[in-house]
Length: 169
Image (tube, rainbow, N blue to C red; front, side):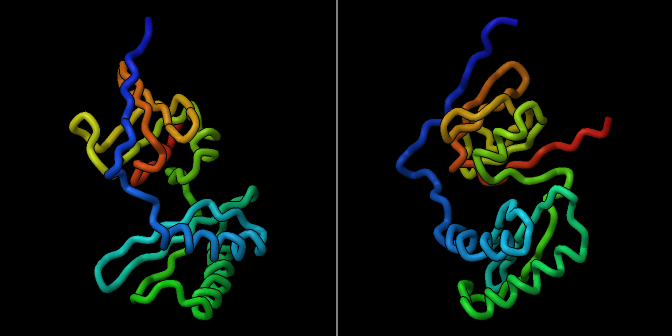
């Protein structure tokens, strides 16, 4: 097959930074989820003008049922009411990661090496923001993905969204 060309997405001064709001929410809610016996898979905060969406993904080795989501939602709602970290209106959603689970951390990417993934970047690289291919690995804080005959090294902090592409074998 030969050596695949590797394309690097260089970090720049203008790169998007991880939201301090998202870090604050993760730090506040992660321990609450874990205290209930679940893994906090990830947190998304999507600002939609006057009304936003706070989505918490939870996971458990035995799977996640609707009752689990309700239990976590009630507990998180209480913490959010007391701490009040979001000043605008928002909808709270608690969900399992599902088959097309989103990837948030370097550890999650490393655990899914060999899977097909879809990655959307915050800014274009070589004229594109969307990549779909085989997750090859992780190098420091960079994700290696093979798309056709090219390997791309994408800094995790520039990834806007990444999901596993489910296999239906």
